[in-house]
Amino acid sequence: MANYDEEVRSPTFSMHIPSVVVLKDFVARKDHPPFTRFNLYLRDAFECQYCGSPGYIRNYRDGVTLTLDHVHPRARGGHKTWENMVAACASCNVRKACRTPYEAGMKLRNKPRIPTERHLMRMAKAFPPNFLHETWRDYLYWDEDLSE
Image 1 (tube, rainbow, N blue to C red):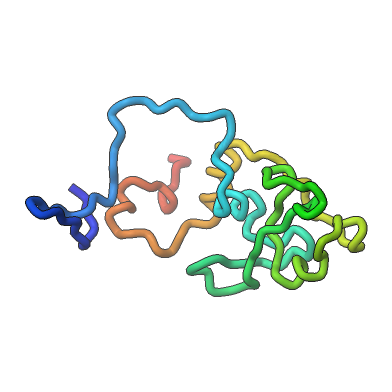
Image 2: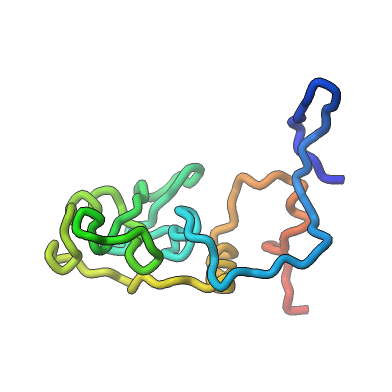
């Protein structure tokens, strides 16, 4: 059994937190992946979509701090959707301000679109986290040569 070192406790019970959970039943996938900050950064390859600077979040050491930018500003009716949000470095986000990229004289490197699960999985393999618990390694295949 693969567990973290931490425990959870109640007044009458304590247990180590499992680091891996296996589902016994099939869980149908949604039409598209959940719209989360991490998935958006992953879709955009952890790069500013205006200047191309490599960015980081949390444990990433090199690069600029990434922010989320509304292509069509919220103050002007823009929504929080896959098609209207991109990863942007803080300086590009400030430079663009409450304008469209065209008005700010900035060009998007990639058109924002809804990613597929497969696309995000491909992108995730290019950015394996360096903070995984060692028990996860038995369940992930990032280091293995699958060509054999």
